[in-house]
Image 1 (cartoon, rainbow, N blue to C red):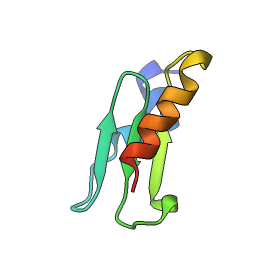
Image 2: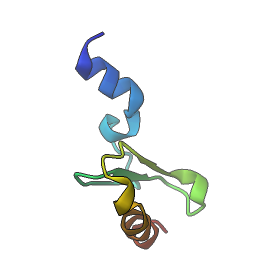
Image 3: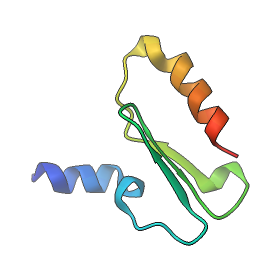
Image 4: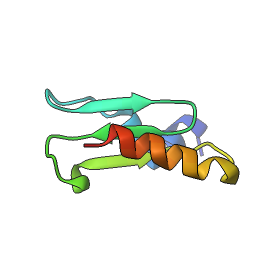
Length: 67
């Protein structure tokens, strides 16, 4: 399968156009998409690229960014 197509399918929120109230944070280690609502269900973290030893640090970063 085409690598770019697979990437799009697995990490759609990384590439989906943002709505007027949406926000996306893209880092080397993850992508955080924050949607229209203030409930946690409107936030999606995906495309994780980090070592197991970085998990606590990445969780802190995401928790600090997400409403």
